[in-house]
Length: 420
Image: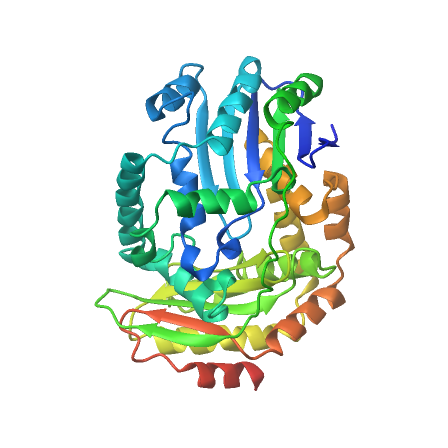
């Protein structure tokens, strides 16, 4: 079935996609505000707020929130991204309206009691410490900061420990006031859901919200750069980013096909050349990310310190070689991977509801699955080659090396090799 899209009188958007034959449903409140909506003094507050939503409301304490969803066998969680904060639940069909009531309560009515703030502050500081101790986690935060320096889009979602240590109730309440209006909230539900009943429940729980203006978002500016962090590790971790098309670009699907063929699986060029043929690494991949006004292709690999120079230069050589164009078989294989991944993922109501919210946030509508598949089918080899040429022509990568990386070429040398 195709998705239904509705809008309450206060501007809150609702997307519903029933999936006949299922016993469960996924329902979520997706707020179009995340890390890039923070001012520098707020860095980390969106994520802190996501944590605090589960600590209690005037109607429910933290234990009651957990017990209420688990009493019906459900599941509730949340995450914070660059452009969205999601609060979502998975429940059986009979419990959809109850889940909406619970989600609405924790999102709209958090107490922000000081003792709870202190407890959660400790939890988040531990989360930051864990990320810093995980090389193949923290390197992507550093890569983002290097690619988009001195701007909200480049800052870490978790925030620096010194900021998190100082947040209080006024900081949390200010972010809610600035970004949690009805026009910034999307209700998305899929699976065993009755659209008519859900719309009535949404009007009861969310229809009273008053519209409010939201602040302008600073545009993202990809700058490139280099960061090296020496650390005593068994491996050198290498991450690189190049700017790529944004989510609304007509070149997005060609970019996805290129990235998949180049580094998206075991048959990809990077995997076959650097791991299978040369044995330089265990993990290597490339992936494309697209946002409202920018995008990036990210490359990652980990290798021994005696191999890092060869790995870096060969990655650049393979990128440059790709400008000659991909083989038709590579394009068709990547196209099949993307289509299968989309269709397999959408067998899950959770994946479908998240797709609904993302499409609404980007397009203010939900393209059909058939439309998305048709766009992938329409991509030609020449379009893929054009995307590769435009990306490689930048020759201005963001590069981060973590570990014993003395043998790695610097950014200037690598960019020069890319442009050769």
